[in-house]
Length: 383
Image (tube, rainbow, N blue to C red; front, side, top):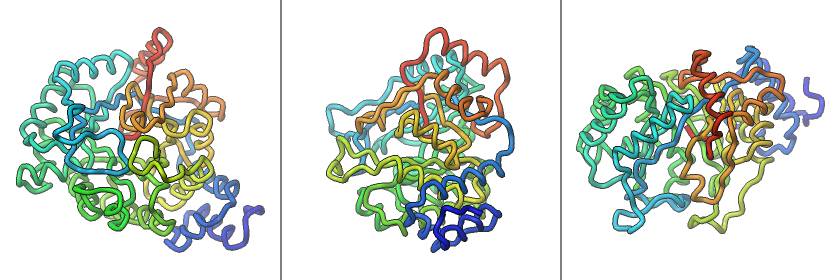
């Protein structure tokens, strides 16, 4: 029993600790509560029940943004550039492959590859991109193309999402990141963006990918124009899809970073709200096995504290990150700092892959040695 919580909150927390599913109204009650300690303690208990192993994990990958050209207008995004902008770019193929090579040399086994909604590239361009990467680096997982990109491909190519995903999977796409979710409620999406996938189609991309045997992550960016009810509606939609497919391996949430965006007038929510929301996500998403800490937006100390608020994974040692950095938020950690943060909590730090399997001791040692010899300038998350 959690003695510090108010009676209604305590009842809900005890229910979650016992492994019972929370209702949407119970989720909202928790979000309305200010009892951070009790909510965090419950999330930690659930996390330890789901992950009794003596270690906590992290990944080594690189966020490669192959283009910033985008036809959508997202008021929260400081990264994108319109198709006619002089600041738009498409990475040359040789430069992109060099980034992958650098990632491998640093002990990475994955790239997170995302871009804008480019108006001209056909699907064969993306198939060739995947072929070039997998031909040169067959051992590297391509965690690529968010649901907004993939839905955009259907429009540009006049293909079904099933055909798009089947072709990309055959070309070497390994898994899909949960980017572009923001809040999966159409009212919120309509206020935040124009020309971007809406809720049902975002979820359908994931359903179809999972039906093809693929895995993906799920995300939430909160603290902007959504209500608390809509925050829970987002979690509930993810939980429902997971009930159907079982294809989500992890959930990652982070707070909206307003600097340099069209929504810079919105006051940023702080670490209190971040920790509370992540902890509630752990309690609510009873069928998604892993929760990642978002140190890349919260910094080292809050990112570490998040491991006591429901997270079992420190996310990625981001070798490169561009999207959040454009909004003025740049937290850089070395692999040593990530591993020490885990050790300080009493766990063994272990490197994992996208499936949350531990990597070989040889690969883990390569990453540790590379970090000791030449610590990367920047290291990531946002899978």
